Amino acid sequence: MTIGALRNALAGVLGSISSRTGLIQLLYVIALVALMGGFVNAVFFPLPNQGQIVYPGSGSQTIPEAVLDASVILVGGAGIYVTYISGRQTTKSRMVNLYLGIALLLLALSVFMGLYLTVLKGG
Image 1 (cartoon, rainbow, N blue to C red):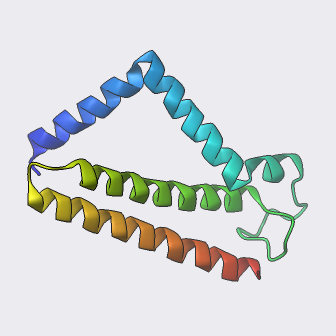
Image 2 (cartoon, rainbow, N blue to C red):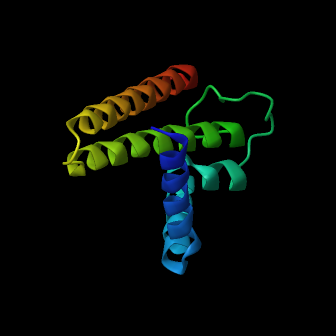
């Protein structure tokens, strides 16, 4: 991938976000990930000791833990989206393999991060 292709790809993404529907979609994804990550629980029912990143008990979490949970969800979602993109790529077979490899890497990273957080949480 050349610098020009990267610039064109970023311009396409930023152009679609700057439109009204793209901005609404981005806000929807952010709100959905925030709810799945547990921001409501972390903000409205905070723990007295926020010194730990991952609180080792069920039913409560810290704000940094909610951010980590949201990042795990975003990495997994990005892996699923890149898998979808690899299936739509029909012109270059090398790109299909590249997209699929990146997607599998993102999905594996998401699974391992999620399992690591579960072990730290004690569940």
